[in-house]
Length: 209
Image (cartoon, rainbow, N blue to C red; front, side, top):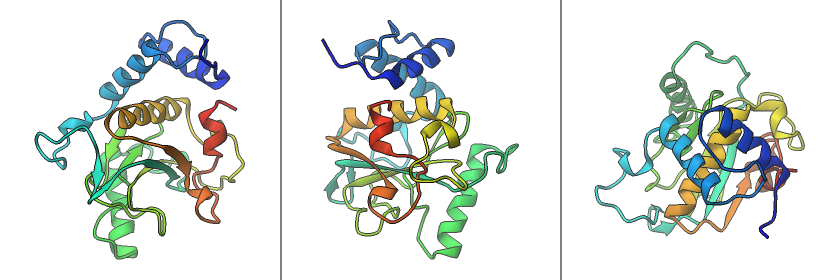
């Protein structure tokens, strides 16, 4: 019998409340749960294969430059929960892009994907380009940023600083990326630098602890 992850039951309950049928609430990541997460992903954000920044007719394997993507690294924006609360996600992404380009001198936003408090997704830098999100670990990785996390500690539980909608959307996004490229690891920024970002332990979050 497949291993059950306690935290996944909450995700399955959330999917059910949002009218995406994950099947039994059993904590197992089966085909129906995966399909429900992918349906949520398509409903909440642009389809990955339809992004204008991706080459037309591109293969399913995502590459950043010449490097096959094998790791996704989770970040937070270090913003307060009500930051730009009445603004569209596109405006928030534009502001973060401005931080990265004007204040840090980068050529574009450093992250590849951003997830708002309500679970909506927005693309950042093209997946086919190397990001700028972890020093010495940008090649072959994708950077995903959760909006929020101001004042968070590296050991906080996910739900202290982020929403259930973000939890569901992040898992759906990771499931979609794994279908397109051989992801071997999902990690947090705090595993590669002495930082609190993303404001929780990604390994513990992955197993629902």
